[in-house]
Length: 118
Image (tube, helix red, strand yellow):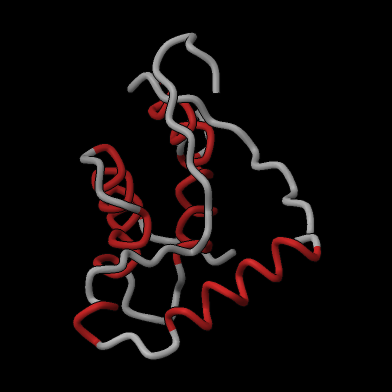
């Protein structure tokens, strides 16, 4: 990890305290090819608790819970068949029909409030 000036360190910490994301802070404060991972490491040197711990704490303060996702099981034969059938049904859809579909990365998110469980 390279050393940074006191001024740049102050800029980074100020941006962090202002709630600016690490990625945006990296773009604003670095003139080289530093990435957000390097900036996070530099920021963690100057903070009493690491950025990841701070993020976790903030999420909990807003009433959400943080969980590590479970490994998803592989699809069985029936599920693969149903997906194939679905895809064949949609094969000739128009752009207008597809424009009404919301795509995601298949991540499942469960937001719970308080102690209501996952």
